[in-house]
Length: 274
Image (cartoon, rainbow, N blue to C red; front, side, top):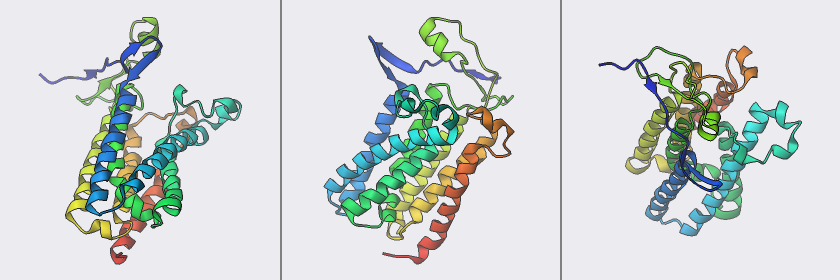
């Protein structure tokens, strides 16, 4: 028997204790950081790099990720609203994070970290940080799946998902679920693309001399993440209504510079050994 579609009725919350709830998204975010720390610890030990650098790096990265992702959402997708509600800009708990902003935030944090802590070129750090970051991108998209958000256009593919469209009312007010049309599970498309990228650049780091060619791993990371994002956006629903009249949506426009930088780094890197 071939399924016509999959009805997705997973609730975002794992459990609640009074006003405090534990959600899959937060759990996956925590797992991503823990696994990322473990991976970088192995890298740093193998290269005999002081582990104190790693502890400081993660503080910089966490702050850069959260601030960058939030401000990216505010300025790239919601400025019309937030310009009139300045006090809500830092209210992360209300939702609204943008991966392109997160990438900018991480790169900015690494530049500051490199000047203050490692005294190495930012690309040296980014080459190593790219490996666990690709894995984190996988977990974040799986969190989006659990939240029934960032899904695609309607499709008749047998792997289409029907998501709960009135999630808040269903979960918090006891309403009957209203399902979307069978749609592309674009969260899974991106998640699997990022997982494949993680496996590839992990292999590059451990099995080739890529880590000694400044910018190569980070360049491949940028190409893999943002080229995947660019093409998957064609079957993904727009996040904001202003994108409906655009030939390329905001996610695609923001991805192009990252892909171009990635190509530049990947082409240039083989001629730059350290």
